[in-house]
Length: 216
Ligand code: HEM
Image (cartoon, rainbow, N blue to C red; front, top):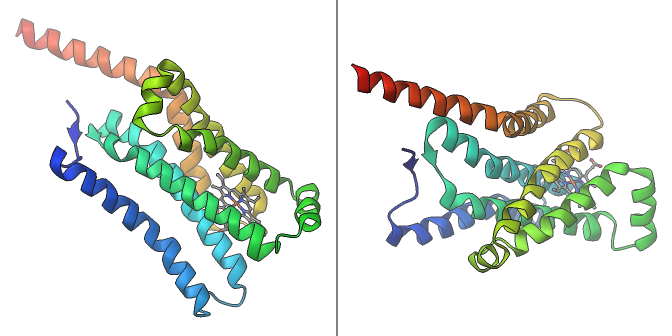
């Protein structure tokens, strides 16, 4: 049986709200630093980068919930929706900074950027795919969409793969940080591919254990 790290029902919604509040702190802190001139020589770029990085971190955390439950029997399902929505809010903020502070809402500049830098198109596709996921991250949609909900939410895999590609293509030089995040994404996607085999192997082992106990 998996250990549920969600608090008892009466504290659960408070703990989820706490996660939202804590999750938004980095973004608000960078905003504060930006306003007071503490974001270095190129504050717009730095702000944009940091928001993008947090978007990727929350996407990774959202996808970590299933392997953590499968492999370590720790159930964090109650927090998955908040993690996914936090990822979405950071992507939106990253995009808003790009449109306003970076490109100054100048349409020709954005268009020129899209034709020159393909990773911008990939980023935009990721954002577009995240919109239906964010809009249907509620109980009402789960009930209404039935089995189609799970199919729709598989979009999270092309989103995270696209986000890693977007990150890799945006790099001017390779450092340990992108190598780390891109490796995490590759591992998460590889786990997803291998999951049916891993689960079958685990249940076979469990059945063998139960049979051994019954005969001893
Ligand atoms: C799921 C969606 C997205 C994720 C997870 C994401 C994440 C990232 C990450 C991690 C970086 C690199 C930060 C660094 O250098 O440390 C980055 C860079 C960047 N992203 Fe995104 N991004 C997304 C969508 C978008 C969108 C929609 C746009 C704009 C249309 C965009 C525009 C940019 C730009 C302009 C850069 C900086 C490139 C440079 O250094 O010049 N991103 N993004």
